[in-house]
Amino acid sequence: MMRIAVLGSTGSIGVSTLDVLGRHPERFAVDVLAAASNDSRLLEQCLRHRPRVAVLQSSDAAARLERGLRAAGASTEVRMGAAALEECAASANVDAVMAAIVGAAGLPSTLAAARAGKRVLLANKESLVVAGPLLVEAARASGASLIPIDSEHNAIFQCLPPGHETGRPGGGVRRVLLTASGGPFLRTPAGDMARVTPEQACAHPRWIMGRKISVDSATLMNKGLELIEACLLFGMEPARVEVVVHPQSIVHSMVEYVDGSILAQLGNPDMRTPIAHALGWPERIASGVQSLDLVATARLDFEAPDLLRFPALGLARAAAEAGGTAPAALNAANEVAVAAFLDGRLGFLGIPRLIEAVLERHQNRAALALAAVLEADAWARDLAETMLAETAVAGA
Ligand code: NAD
Ligand code: MG
Image 1 (spheres, rainbow, N blue to C red):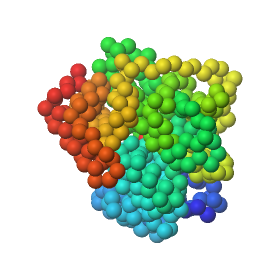
Image 2: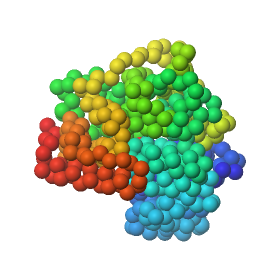
Image 3: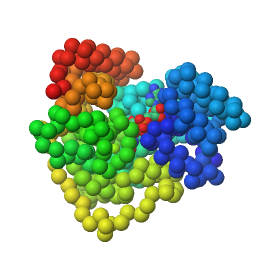
């Protein structure tokens, strides 16, 4: 029996994870469920999956969860705060951790799981962008396996040579082709992009996801974060990771070998496939995902990304090439910009402008110590907030 902690259980990835786990009660036990503040959804999840511990980040929400659990006669222990999250991620009662918190807030618990030698199912790409070398090194030192949940990276993981290690691509790999749906504004003329709303940005044509990653998909920053993620997870230089727009989202990414072979992983766009792959690995387990109907799909299109309409992708590639604390600063500025866009404080085109303005002032440093990346993260957040307050970067 594999005992699982699902961190971010009330979100899009968390809910899909519990769906897959619920299909295999003989194989998996849910030990921990954790979320920020959605106590009503967490209560439902606790009553269905009976975890040993449930963690929330709001004391009011934790008190309500406690009352709900006691009223239902459930024995789940309720805990509160970020330290509880880290403890649960490293707990001896847990074999695998689904890291599905959104944003850099997921870093401490992901790192704790990696240091403790767990199987880390890595959905929280921001933790890798912020502290990739540290996370990869922690996993190597403890023997933890980092299995990507991001559909593209999970596809690459599946297409790499058998037995490849985290941070090393394995023999014969020439490059990686990272596919991108292009997001909701793939065909939106440049002149109309200034006026797009959060609702339009969150209406992704292929995937149903949390609001932050949906906005990232609309700016193509998501693909930029994924480029950095691919370099770190698979030990590739940025020049060997090519982004290819593929609007159907059927080919989830590809690996090209030196002999000219390209291996691809295909499937319906449903996160339960990579989640089931990572949970069952190296075995295959059912996910509940429908068979792909290739005849109905009929065509698979590929095109180059438009870096003029989507400057965020270029900013991320530059941060990947710079290395050091640049990706942490990029990520922090992006988190502030996306939150401001979702709150109506910044226009859509203001997102890459704010990130660029922050990065122009960033002094890059080595990212070998956690303190250095946390400092870069805090510095970039502060500067981005200050610039927003001064409306130094008008969002149009
Ligand atoms: P979401 O917004 O739907 O869910 C986020 C979850 O994190 C919620 O359960 C929330 O309560 C929890 N959370 C947020 N802040 C927290 C904190 N400080 N402490 C504890 N819990 C906290 O997001 P999502 O779409 O499920 O994405 C989660 C992660 O997975 C992101 O890093 C995203 O980039 C990545 N990802 C998501 C998808 C997808 O299809 N949704 C695909 C690939 C990667
Ligand atoms: Mg992805």
